[in-house]
Amino acid sequence: MMRNLSLIAGVLLLLNSCSSHFISDKTFREKVASDLALRESVLEAASVDFDSMSLTTKEREALEFLYAYMPLGDIVNREPSFYLDQYRMTCKAMKEMPWGKRVPEREMRHFVLPVRVNNENIDSARYVFLEELAPRVKNLSMYDAVLEVNHWCHEKAVYMPSDRRTSSPLATIKTAYGRCGEESTLLVSALRSVGIPARQVYTPRWAHTDSNHAWVEAWVDGEWHFLGACEPEPVLDLAWFNAPASRGMLMHTNVFGAYDGPEEVLSVTPCYTEINVTANYAPVVTTNVKVVDANGNPVKATVEFKIYNYAEFYSAATKESNDNGETSITSGLGDMVVWASRNGKFGFAKFTAGKDSEVTVVLDKEPGYTATLEMNITPPKERNTIP
Image (spheres, rainbow, N blue to C red):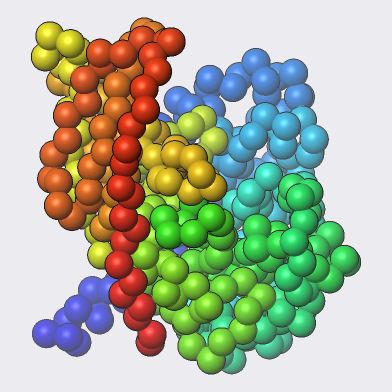
C-alpha cells in the first residue's frame, strides 16, 4: 500500500512539474484574472503591459498573480522586469534544490515566490542569498536545510530592539541587527531564496504578559514547523517561546494573495489573506458568536475579539457576522472579550474559550455609554511542549 501511495505521489509531482501553467487550477486562474482586472487603471498608469513583454505562459501567469495582489506602491516603485527576475530566480532555486519538486504548487505560489514578507523595502536579496546559501544546503535534507539557513541568519544578525519599521533583508545584514520582526523577515526571505516555503508568524498580543512576538514557520515535506528567527537550535519546533506559545490565544500570519489553504481565514484584504495558525502551538477550540439587536433580531456586524494586554483589551482579530448574526473564532483556552458594532450601536461580552461554546452579544449600547465593570481575566494554562 505504501509503495502504491509513493507511486501516486511521484506521478502527481511529475504532472505538476510538467504543467504548462504556473497556476494549474483554471478556477484559480480566473480568480487571479478577475482580481487583476480591478487594478487595470493602476497598471496602465504605471505602464505595466504584459503584452509588450516576451513571456512564457508560466511567466505571464506568475506576473499576473504577483501584480493582482502586491501593494500598489510596489507596482509603481519597481519595473516588471524586477518581478520577472524574481520568478526566474524562484524557478532556478526549485530546479537546483533537491526538494524543489516536492513543494506543492500552492505552497510555492504563496510562500516561496512572493518577494515581500512584511512592510519592508523590497530588495534583491534573493540573488545574494541563493548564491551564498545554495552550496551550504544543497546536500542536506529539507529539515536540516531549514536549520542551516537559520544558523546562517544568526551569523548575519543579532537581536536589538528598534522602533523603526521594517528594514529590508539586505539592510538587516548590513546593520547586523534587528528586532524580531526584522529577523523573521530576514529568515523568511533566506528560506524562500532556496525554495523552502516560509511564512512570518505573529501573536498580536500574548495572553499572559504585556508583549507580542514574531517568528517563522517553514514547510518541510508536508508539515509546517516553527523556529525562532536567527536563534539557532539543534531541532525544529524548539525556541525560547515554546512555553509562552502554549498559552497563546491567537497566532496568525498574512499570506500573499487570495489563499485557499486548510487554515481558518480571519480576514481577506486586496493584498493578503490573514489565517489562524494557533493550533500549531496550543490546544484550541471554536467559540460561536451570535450578534443580535435589543429585540433579539440577528445583526450583520463587525465583530472584534479582544485579548487583555498592556492594560487594554486589544483587538487580536476582526470578523464580520453573517446575515444570521453568526460568526466564530478558533482560539487558545482562556478568557477573551468579544465586541460587536453596527450603525453606532455596540455591545460586548466576556467568554471563556474551552468553557463557553456559544456567546451572544446584544447591540444595546450607544456612544456616551459609561459603566464600571468588574472582570476576572484568566490567561490560558501553560502546556509547554518540547520536541
